[in-house]
Structures are given as C-alpha cells and as structure tokens.
Length: 505
Image (cartoon, rainbow, N blue to C red; front, top):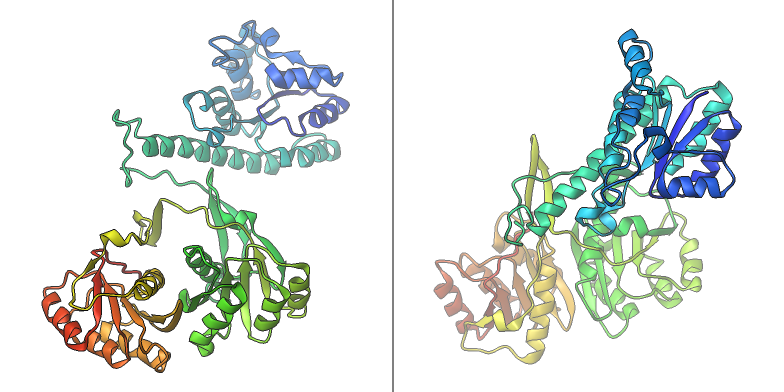
C-alpha cells in the first residue's frame, strides 16, 4: 500500500486530497494541525509521533526531523543496502510528500523560519525517482488525477514537482537571507546595509507577455518571491494582451503620476513623459497633458491618479492610445472604452515601491538605491538676485518632479502645473533645452525650467531665457556655476539650486 506524508501550514484542499488518496488505497501519515483536520473529516491517518515514537518537542521546533521520516524519503528501494537498513530500523518508504512551509514573508521572524519542512522537501526532491513531492495546493488535483489514471505518479511529473520543490526552497531561503540583510541582524548593530554584500534573488514567472521589446523576442514578467507588485493586483478591463514595452512604459507613467497629490495625468512614450499636468480635476489634467506634445502622445501610455469618468473617456477615446491606467473607472467610462477594441484598459493600486533598482549587465547586475525626489524646499537654495514667487516655486517643484523621470540629459519647461516642453535623452544639455523650447512653442513664456543636472555652460540658461523662462531649478555644482548664475542675473531669472542631481539612463 503506497504511503503519503501530509504536513502543511496552508490547509487549503488538504482534506479533499486526503480523501482522494484514501479512496485510491493510500495510507496517510500526518502530524499536528494537518492530522487534526484530516481525522476531523472522518478519514484515517497515522499520527507522525506513532510512526517515529517521538512526540513534537522543543515548542514544535522538532517534529519531522527523524530517521524514520528522512529514511523513508531518501531510501532507494532498488538498492539491497537500503533495503537492509530499512528492515533493520523499521523504516517504511514514503511515496508522496505533501508539504507547504511556514509563511515567513507574512511576518518575518525567527519562529517563522521553517526547518523540518524544507529538510523534508529537499530529501524528497533529491529522491524524486522514487518519491513525489508536492509544495503547491494547485498540484493536488493533477496528482490525484494521474494516480487515478495511471496507478502512480509518472516520472515526468515527479521530476517537474522536484524542480518546483527546489525552486520553492530557494525562494524561501532567499527571503530569510534578505530579511537578515534588511534588518541588520547579522551585523549586530540593528542597521541594515542598503547595498548588502550579497543579493539573494529568486523570481517566479507570473505573466507571459504578447512579445518582448520587438515582436521576434519573447517576453515575460517575473515577480520577486515574497515581494509585492502592483501588477499582480492589476485588472485589465479590455484590449489586447500586454507586451514588454506596454508594461515598461506603463510602469514609468504609473510611478510618475503617483508622485502628484493633485489630480494628475502623465502621458509616456518610449519610457519618457511627453505630457504631464495637474489640475483641479483629472479630465482637465488629461486635456492639458495631451496638449504638451500631441504628436508624441499618439500611441502612448496615459496614466491618471483619479477615477476615470465617461467625460474623460470621451476626451481620450479619439486619440490613439496603447494603454490607459487609473485607480478605477465608472461603468459608463468602461462602456466608452469598450468601443476601442485594442485599447488596453488597466486599473490597479499605486506602486508598492522597491528599495533597490536593478539593471542587467554582462554576467550580472548593476544595483543602486531606488531614486527619490526631495521636494523639501528648505533644502533648496536661491542663488540669484531675483527671488522666485510662490507660484513659481510651485511650478519649480512640479517641473523638478517631471524632470527626474525624464531620460538624461533632461530639460523641462512648465507653467501653471503643465509641462509645455520636454527635452529628453540628448548627448548635450543645450540640445535638450532647444528641443524643450521647440516643443513649448512659446507657451512656456513666463514659466519655469528644470534641468536634471547642472548647466556646464551658460548656453543652456541663455536658451531658456530666449524661451521666456523666468525661473530655473537645477542641482548646481558646476565649476562654472558663477558664470551661469551671472547669466541668470543678466536675464532677471530666479534660479534655485537643489544640491541633488537626477540623471536617469
């Protein structure tokens, strides 16, 4: 009679699995709460303590760490030496192990570090030629169906389950190691290193994408095991499948729009904002954002930080848009968007954020702390004779927020909470300033300019003055700061130094 050992923290489906195995003629060994749940359902199960002769000890820290358990999981019944040891020590082979682990990530602590579970899972997975190991309740039904159809669990399934088991243990151990790094417990001083000596990365594929950056490339979204992603809580209300660039650009738009407290709209094209605005209502914010650069907005991503109404949907619908993302939609808005069959309509929570930013390079990763934007004006320093007005300071904060999300070199011209010209990704700052001036087409006259890094020469400042800019925000720090400040004074422009650069590549 085949033997199954069931020991799970998450009891979802475990009684139904035990009932199916019992019906198929299997014997069941279990312990603790799992045994209680099974026997309470009127199903026979041998308590693990009766098998081992040892009860749970040390506040339940030692339950399954016993030769009769690990011997049963690791035994190769085809080897005479193993057969002899099993006979001498009264070890029965275990054919199926069903385990899921303490949920460490739910409340990281020493007591939620599972020991017996991972040890059993590793043993069974190593011996998968003879033992099947199940760590995911989603596999209960397929395993039962296979036993019912074939009389046993097939080698291919045992191998697949073993792979999943080792992946689960890897992810679990990574969560624990990263917790130690984050909490600083390994240092003994309570202060974690923001860039620890090692990063334990374990990711699970969560979403197969329509294609990668180009149609001939495959693409998928992976999630860090134990982490959170707003994409997992996202709901797609309509439209085609999402591609790699849909996610990449939507992520950029969604992060930026949530940096604004007022109703806001961000339009992104190729990872760069081409329209940003805040307003008293989100419909006006969209209209103003789209007006920044309607040519670039064609085929872009629209992100909004308020519920989308039918009025806003009607304003957006005539413009070809790849994705619209918002916290929610009225039923009437969804009806409007339903007429746009290819428009991907997404809703979801705001980004949860991550402490680290990772990018791949040959053989590894570049890692840095995630960028933040400091809008504490007490950290700013006015360096010109002209002083910014209260309205200009608000616009400078707005432009600085936008500029931090634009590829370097970055220049943003803005006025009254609306971006009018965005110069992105140029090899020199003067070209970015010229592009911003061309895009603004005089509309930023009297407005402000943000530069993600210092002006190395006065020419960028002169270009802003020619566009009618009256206040500038930049990090400062150039050896020619004096020359640039003098140029601002010549033009009567107020200039603020933040002391913080915002390169983005």
